[in-house]
Image (cartoon, rainbow, N blue to C red):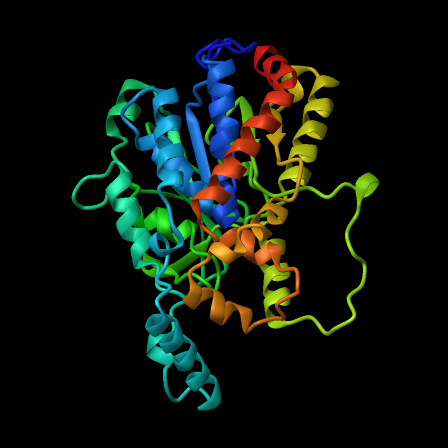
Length: 388
């Protein structure tokens, strides 16, 4: 079941790992991957793609110099070392000053305060935290050369949204230059840096955009309609995708269908952000399965540029936002005070909270959920990786 096994066409099988985002919920991916590493130690993806907070996990795993299981254990430690204050500044002065400047710009018709509005929070702490935990050189470049040269890693792609043209862009560092310039997603060969990681994870409006090359870039989920496409373009023959977004099934839908009071800004912001991170992964998987079924009915001579790519997706069994509500009181008091002004104290705002609360107990719980959910699906995973 090795990722270096030969595929049916005689080439080397290339397993890809696709990690999507959702703020703090991306810690769920760590639990999933640690469980797989224990049960299926041969699983070592040669292609990594990261979107939003998933870019942090992908970059860490790609640059780590140790074994695969060691990299996952260390990544778990990194997540559990996080605190909200290590992601963005929450002191009263900074939060109040940003709120006042945003309000000043609105009230003055844009004449004042415009030069300072770059996100609702200051994410300088996150940049410092990642610089101290990601394996980079002094210039912030990820240490990927050895793995690429040795063939341990074929490629890593981090996806951002270019605010200048509204397109999704995949920043790729690979062992080859066989990239693509077609479709809605553009590839850009580069030496990946901490800035690419921060740009991909920049939650719109909440986190400030990051300048890459000649444009400002933000969260990769904004315009990426096909989250599997970077891995497919990079030559994957089998893809494991891990998303921390809960998929609501119609058969067990148990959510309120109405509210008595007008929704607060906090409620609306949570729904909007959640819609961004409810990626199109399931639709993309379905499309890939349909292509596979079509190819099975055709002789290989008629496949043209198409090829079979097997895909499996992992998602949480429960809404991780429900877990976040239990930890809301652990938010820093200054941040809790200002964010409570967006909505009533009794209002359920788990969508927003689950993305921005970076507290040890919450992160540990969703990592554990990742391990538990993955353990239940282990027979499927073993069959998936064993299939040819």
